[in-house]
Amino acid sequence: MTLPASGLLTLGDINEELGRSRTAAIQLDKAENGDYGTINTCSPSYPSGANPAKISEWYDYNHNAVCSYSTKSCLFPPDDGNSGSMLYGDGWSSVSEEQPKFNDDSGGFSYGAWLLPRSEDATDYYMSAFHNYSGQGGGTSGGGWDLHIFNTSNGKTTLHFKMIDESSPPGGPNTTTWLYELNNSANASTTGIATDRQWGVGTAAYAGGISIPLTLGNINGNNFMRLDITYDASATGASRLNIYWNGTALTRTSGGTHTLNNITWDQQYLVVGGSYSSEFGSGLCWDEVTYFYENCLSSTEVNEIYNSGAPQDEGNYSFSYTNVLFRFEDAGDLGLDTNGAYNLSNQVGTPTSSTQHA
Image (cartoon, rainbow, N blue to C red):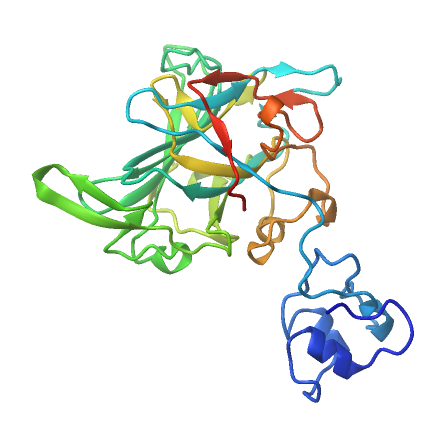
């Protein structure tokens, strides 16, 4: 139930709302800071956590509230093994707003999404990219990044994040790739992908009769997980990049040490559901895709977006940075961001929406 909006409110009422015994020992300060259960920020009203703690902050609190926005669908670029599909964009609507770009003097960028594998027995997930899309593979002119996850016959599930700078030949462009094994001993407990399994749905079959069962890993109540990538331009070496699974930083396996110069990406294409025309059809459902293209989010901010597995409206974040957000809810304009400014208006194949959502 929801706590009353006014009148008598007791510590016992708060205990019961938090799912505890009415007579359990309770301290308001501890309750506000989540010691007895994470505060549900989707509630229309909730305690701030600031001191001094007051019982009046609990008026109208609903511990089981569902976020007020309606996330009813996700983007599903299916992969039939031949012709796959994806969305990509380079255009703006009539709204006058700066196009997503990145300059290494701006501090960094952060990209994330709620994801759910749907294609049975998939071994390769060509996921997303930001580059000068050529439509014919490569497309690296002007620099950018791309993101893949590969399952391989040696039993590994590895996330690849590649960045390319704008340096001119013969010295460039320069490329560096960060590798994260999602099912090794360092990351298995975070991802929920055991060392004898790989990420996905069904069973992956490889040459030589090798067969490896697939799993979704650690997911929320709607079977989605949250992946976030942050790049800190002020850092050096491999530490520039962090990748988070459900708000927890993963341990890098290798890579990311090569020097990048002249990282000033402008007028590039954001691609969701693939990378190039030869690398598409991720077989994933995508929901709540966020691109903070001028800011490297802190670990606390990444965890706030994860919100214990409950996607929340960006208006509830404690921070406010320039970003684009895609929810894929408008079937007539599937790739339009929530501000109506940036549109993934181009497509390869026939990406569609699914009623599944994070």
